[in-house]
Length: 263
Image (cartoon, rainbow, N blue to C red):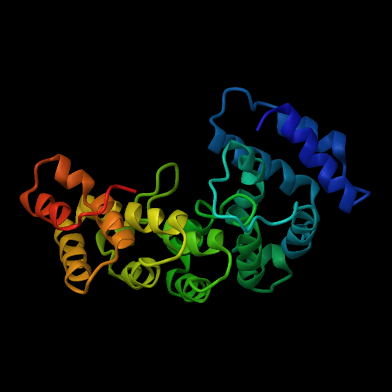
């Protein structure tokens, strides 16, 4: 998210909003950005957007969503180019629960539609965590609806966005303490047709295993008893790799029983 990306973002917004103040936004977004990490830059630019987009959150999001490029349906990693949309996702996570700036309306549904759209261009795994922390039950209901979405990026969000210890993302303290609310998500996605999604399920289980290894061991053993496919066996091997590397006997036994090679 350097100068070129900021200018490109401004150009995209000006295409859908002729009155968008390109110069003012670019000046604000560039100010003080150099020493920031990529995630800090995302927040910084989101705040610059807040200063120039419509004051009403829902109207501002409408402009942002209109500027998006076509969605991706292929199940591949987005790569660094996808980080172009990091400020958009931080805009939603920073301001998407603020009733005061939504004319007194609850902006939750608008935010969820935005995250759904963004995750098909970049990822909403970082942005959705704020909603899971502040409105967990409500957000999990939405995630449950997305589990059967035809787009693999959306299905992956269901697993990746709810990981207790997502790298670069906010930890979700309640899931670190008790990950059981996310287990139905993993059950639903463990045999997903997309390796991209199954790898996320494995990494999610790996997160849980750092705090609740017995829960992960029990889950994986049950899946094996139920006749795990070769793909699911690979997922299981990946899920318990960290305790196995530490020499945990039960993890090693699970990996031996799951014959599939690692993901």
